Length: 321
Image 1 (cartoon, rainbow, N blue to C red):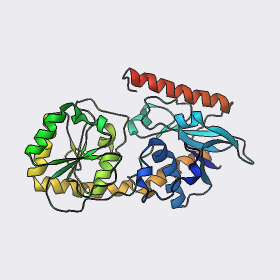
Image 2 (image 1 turned 180 degrees about the vertical axis):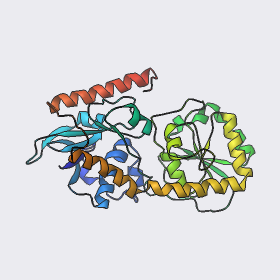
Image 3 (image 1 turned 60 degrees about the horizontal axis):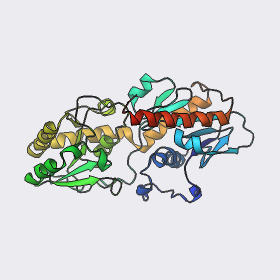
Image 4 (image 1 turned 180 degrees about the horizontal axis):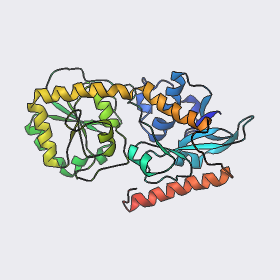
């Protein structure tokens, strides 16, 4: 069965096809999950796949509910059955009627028809140049408005200045560049509550970049790593400062986190993630994974739009699934 990765954009035929040299093109959910998956699988040699901005009738269509809900239809020769593989990503809601790819192992246990696949490592990642123990720059991983320290911004700036540490934003302008970063801060919230819907990307990218990572409690960080061995988990601002000071003062701990991260990261290579996707697709093709039969493709699109609406309402009232 032909696999079609559904993307957004009328100019999709002109999308760059070298993610490591065009890493900044792959900073949005649709490009990271759908188009990048197509490119990595193609590079790996997986056959009978393609991408377009349409739903191909009679094929296996892979994309987010947002993209699938807005895409037009295109027929494919000699195929009758249409299958949807929905990428949940950060969505607070996803229907369990279709096969769903989730970025958290906890969601794969919690929701039926949900399959955990690791996020792709950061394309074009530039690792830390120095092998020395020093803490002069701390990299804030992610989108600035989601940084936990934003609520302590002035205090954090002063605390870092007192320690002669420069704050660097690893946002969409330089998500790939860890060359001068000495600690990665991957903290979305200060509290004891465990976040369950996010991927472990920031931790895995830190391992790949050979930089120690400080994280908040998240189920996927705990799934792939071990607190105190390959990352440091904190729950409060005071604990954050304590962790930074510990990494400044303890050379052995600093290098131990890097060494253990390097051992772990080999399990999260492009090839390993390709194998996870292939296992899912082959399970669907060989019917070892149950797939809902679609009675109406047009009605299915309505359901995708409904999923989007439910996600918006859950986000509005800050209700997490």
